[in-house]
Length: 205
Image (cartoon, rainbow, N blue to C red; front, side, top):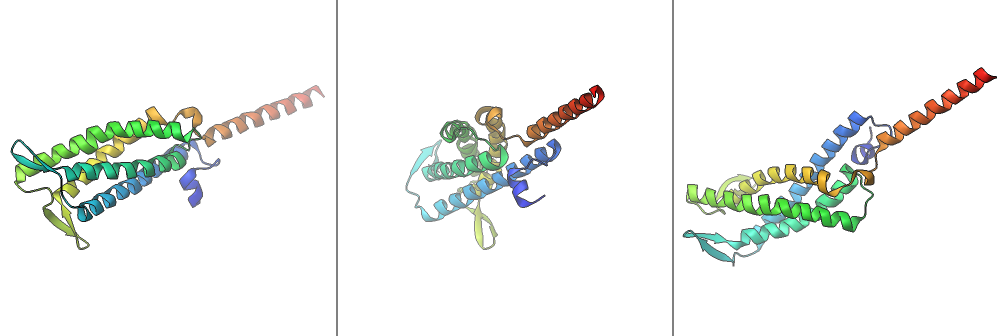
């Protein structure tokens, strides 16, 4: 199996192989999307000043985190849509229509997980530890990792699962997907029919 087959599939793959290929490519696509989200989150956090703050239950909360998540979300949605369309679902549907549905599904997961669950986890974390979310808890390759970074990573796992389910149910229509296994089945049936016709012809002769 060559790299191209792994990425976009092929006619010689069995249904079982195609199933595992899709799972593998979804994980890879999710990994790339997650990397884009994490890197953009970190860059925004490092280079954009913290100018937006408000108080909630006597605790100061920065709007910078919420704005950061919006920027990361837009970038991640664009990357995720095209990776999913090309490598996982192999859709031939209209890009604009799919992208709108894809963005809609992502808005749901964004509000529930990327904003709601994330900000809630940050609030609980700062309340329990008494430390701000930008407190560095460890260092990886010389880069400081904060509470916000850790919560963001955990949160993205939930987002990844929810996004796959919604993409399959709400965005990519089955009739728009390229299904090589169906082509093989049709070819096999055609071959059987042709063989049967040849045998009948031989018997009649």
